[in-house]
Image (cartoon, rainbow, N blue to C red; front, side, top):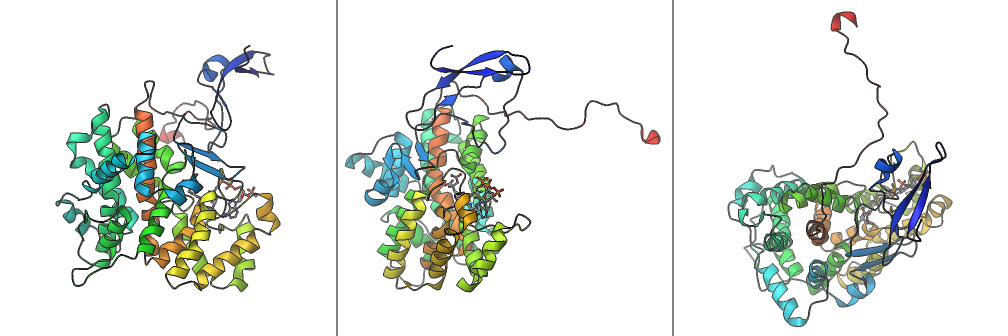
Length: 431
Ligand code: SDX
């Protein structure tokens, strides 16, 4: 028994097994259970992965108790204040803050990959006008591998890198094209003179008939929100991307699987669900009724934008977005948005309620983000698309980290089987 092991004792047989401990640089160490089945005959059981580390990573660190989030060691509060989404993307992909020349080069690379293959226009037209933009995103992103045969060899680091650049750059173009299709307006091409978020706003909201002036408040607000959404450790969609990537699937297919997983209302779809919830509640006088529903186990209603698997404290991103809400709404002349007032009151009442206090349920990143998207004129069904644009950076950084590992192998969890024991087939005439 060494100091870097823990001992498993099987009280049924008295057998003792020493298990190695893997040390972290921050947060809990991990017991390596890779040999556990072979040495003990047991599976470990952790549906929902509450206590399971699926991998090691140097990208993002969360401390749920303290409500801390760091990208490559840099606190999210400092990146939110001083950085840009493109700089965060470069940091996440390559590990260090870029110097001015490197940042300029990276920005130019991303900018010059933002156009879509002209054949894709027909793809968008194939969707009915009321298709949810997330459905279009899943389909179109998954189809990109059909266009880029020159970057699907995942064992080639250059292919991996160009595929990552293409995906980061094209997500806004695909998102804007999805939106334009849904409102029956012509697609707008990227403009290489614009910033990442300025380009997105222009592709979404400009029309051929008149000049579109990008509001710098909106451009900056969107950039900040994208920084906050860039990565978040091994959340459901990132774990989906890693599992898909572990089979050797091409990066376009892996990112499409991440978009699909993000869409769920328990995950990235929550920002859209929060606005629908606030709209349904309508008035602060109805908040107590909805809180009672949220607390009722027999009622499927949950307080959307509240709670988090890891954060048992305020989500640091929600704290930043909440503060930003005030500033952006004021600057956009929407400071007295009744929905924002309702959200503030809802948070205040919920956070003083024993049910939420006992379960450490705080607002998460999705509780306030939709209010800013709404103030920027982004329609509710595009909220999760915004999340997907930003999280594509994290998905790709995590995918590149995994694929680049020497000992990378296919992910293949086991199960606790509780079904029927072995039995013989019964001919239909004897049943
Ligand atoms: C994101 O993982 C990530 O990092 C995700 C994310 C990212 O950046 O990738 O941070 C983005 O997905 C944020 C979460 C957005 N989802 C929502 O806002 C939907 C509402 N929240 C819940 O569905 C829930 O809180 C989850 C899904 C976020 C977390 O679920 P868990 O960890 O499985 O927690 P749980 O369901 O076991 O809840 C524990 C208790 C339960 O009560 P009891 O059974 O103990 O009596 O808290 C209750 C739950 O019923 N609870 C809620 C609640 N969230 C949890 N009750 C009412 N309203 C809620 N929102």
